[in-house]
Length: 158
Image (cartoon, rainbow, N blue to C red; front, top):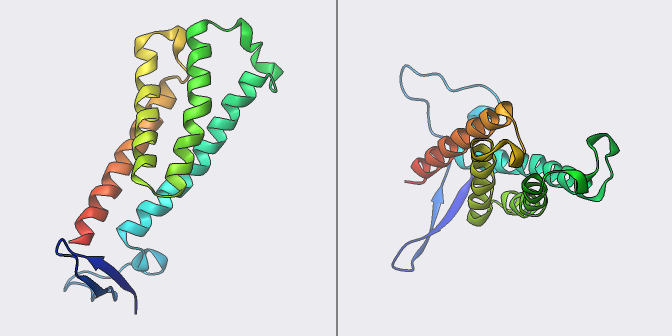
């Protein structure tokens, strides 16, 4: 038995049984792990996987700032808008990763802010762009997937 506690607006706490539902007539249940995975659990797994990616991005940006990757050139010689972008993402990507790992609402908001700023930065000027067209497309895909999972998880609760 899989149960969830939910508190209503009146303050009453109730326990809800979340036993797997029978498949609808004409539909077969998906075999294996996907049949047991709810949309909310899928969202949490997505956020935690994304957290690892954002930790790697944040550490990569810090390695650029600290000069640990000499193949990328001297950080001090980069244009000032690009330096600002790298420092901003070095700090904020790691904060977003912590929030994503905790599946906290502020983590999703901070990650969305990072993804949108990364996506818009090439349009604002090439000197401050951290990512190229592939990075912008990947961020757009991840944001769309995040919204889909969030919407489906919200629908699942009611």
